View (cartoon, rainbow, N blue to C red):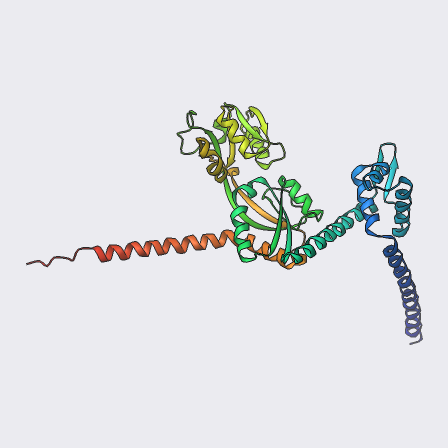
Length: 365
């Protein structure tokens, strides 16, 4: 009995020491936070970002229009406030430490939020009631987003949208760095730890002149096109990666005559006789057909693609951001349901007409 009591007393004393240490840390943490709030103003955060982007304190100070000595003092006070070294100084310039990487993520988010505050408050003066910043790859922008975003704005006329084009990898990075609320990229892109939802499906075709030997084909395997010249998209595009991988798997070189920056340039180069190109089917319909080009469907599995929506945290989106996210992730299913309903209505209409116009059966005598 005495041993149990002694153990209980020992435990109580040990637990008391732990509690005292934790309680003693509370004012220390509060002091650190208070000091950080005093030193971490927006000008200093903007300077921190400028040093990271420019690589040197001198260029950063010049960009932010402050003296180098003042910039150096601000950076030193910031490091003292956070209690860690943020930059490694070397002959080539200044690079982030692990602590600097952590602050970079939060600083970008804070500055983006400040920018959004300014945009949204300015928008209220002109009747705007929300703002969503998006980034998407070229396929999504050309094929689907014009109609999808128009449908959204018809329902939410006072919402302002900011859309920027980037390759799929750049879309993921921008959303992960909090530079965009939503992103749309290729389904085979590395999406890190972002939330991913399906957006649209599309398929790829070989675009060629109508006098090309393969133009009359109903469909074609990509390997059959490798004996001729190709017009390729820029190296960062997912289509470029897919075609190079397919050529490697076929054991043949991809004979690229030229790299071009966009779909319209591919169509013009193909029209001029520079070779064939690979484009999304709808892009070929929109841009290729007016130039007299033919789109032959690819038989390869990789030619069937999906586009996805990415977001850092769906629950943390603004109300209008969540509305747009839900609109985009359900638009394909809604269209499929409408097409099915229209087809059923059309079939029912045809049946009714056939019944009404059918001649009456003659009686046998």
